[in-house]
Amino acid sequence: MQELDKGLDLAVKGPAAQRAIAAMRDQLAAWGLTMPPVEPLVLDFGLGRFDEVGEIEYWIANEVEAGYCGKFLFVRDGQTCPLHHHREKHETFYIVKGRVRMHFAGTDREMTEGDVLPVEPGAPHCFTGLGPALLLEVSRPCRIDDNYFADPAIPIGGKGQGRTAR
Image (cartoon, rainbow, N blue to C red):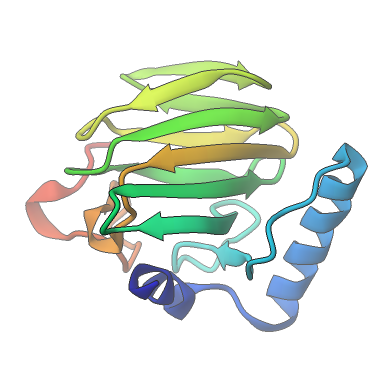
């Protein structure tokens, strides 16, 4: 998973990552859920503010040749996956547990367990946990350079003209 390696280069590591993973596992256990046997990716998007801007990802599959990707995304209460878009990737989000405020198509909406949201390429989106939340992302393959973030301080993803408007 070459793309996963790019994410791991930027991942939170050490005691901070271990604390985040332990807290997430406690929440998953409280929900009665088990994650797949893959190493979780603790992301702060290179900003160093994990409690505010970040998520924990479980990459189940990123099958570039077959054309699909599947990930679980975990956010804490008040934690945000930052505003971004993709030029190629189409995503569908399913809320497994908890609630999120999803910004999509210029509006904010609260999504709860069982809600589904398809996000077509080019559509700016972000989400924030309203309490802890677990999302399933099913999408075209993940390519790190196909993430265009609104925040220019985020050091990964596509650069230049593709930046998402704030």
